[in-house]
Image (cartoon, rainbow, N blue to C red):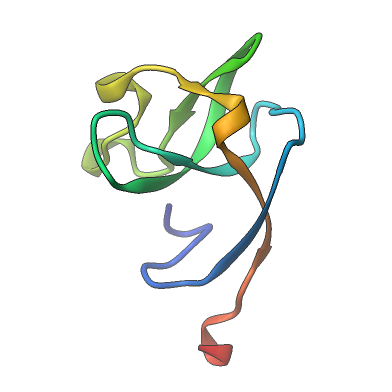
Length: 84
């Protein structure tokens, strides 16, 4: 997600808000135990597609498909690296 976020940067998110294109969201990556932080590229009802700011070097909805909005968190605060 660079330059919007840097590797290891802390985030604070909130659950239960509607997804909109352009938001940064944290969601479970289907088929794994990992979570991904990506930008919303499409919303269709309760499903959304997530894309990366660095599309050439990332795994996103092009690889794992749509994810449920209800299981995602809207990133509301990006913790500055100097605080970590």
